[in-house]
Figure 1: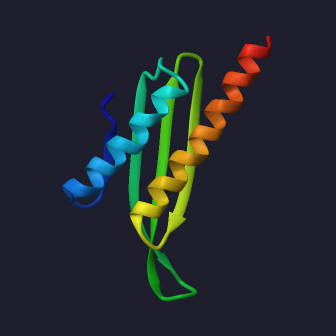
Figure 2: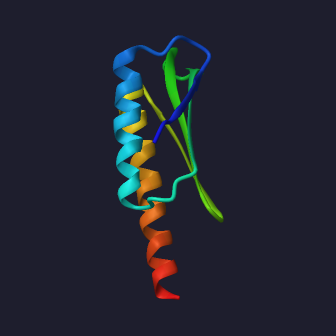
Length: 100
């Protein structure tokens, strides 16, 4: 599965590989993923006067879309947290579908 990474800056190879690896593991919870998009943004944190890293992840499967947004001081933490959020959503969805 190829993850489409959208950013307003050049994404380095390390971060791109990390994203592909983390999102690729989500196929364990739904092997019918039709689309995977990650948006990377740099926002201003007005309270600490430092930039915060914003990650938005959208995963599409037939009939459902999963979405998570996470903010952190580094992209690596935000990517891991966003994929964990989507993983929990996918598990919950899988349990609900199996229960019906």
